[in-house]
Image (cartoon, rainbow, N blue to C red; front, side, top):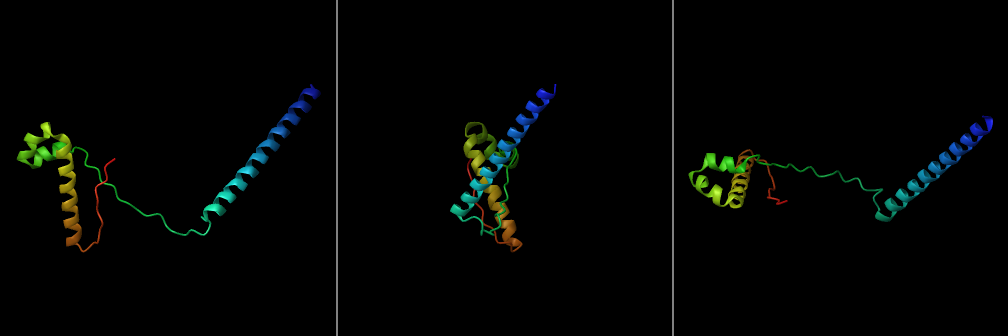
Length: 109
């Protein structure tokens, strides 16, 4: 029984030493990568971006426009684009009325 415990202890010590070695290697790798990319001195804050998604653009178009009721079933992609363009135009108008400078664009994913 004592032999088994000694062997188990040695295995655990070896495994702990291996994990410690891996940790040291990983820290060295991160330090090298930061030095190579010169990211250590970077104090730039991340840019905040607001994302807007219309949940049901076809339903909104049908509700707001008579012509969209006809076009929505035949040309749904075009109607979605038109809804987003109109929403963007209205938001931009509202922001300009409140003197809030904004930069807006539509991003297709």
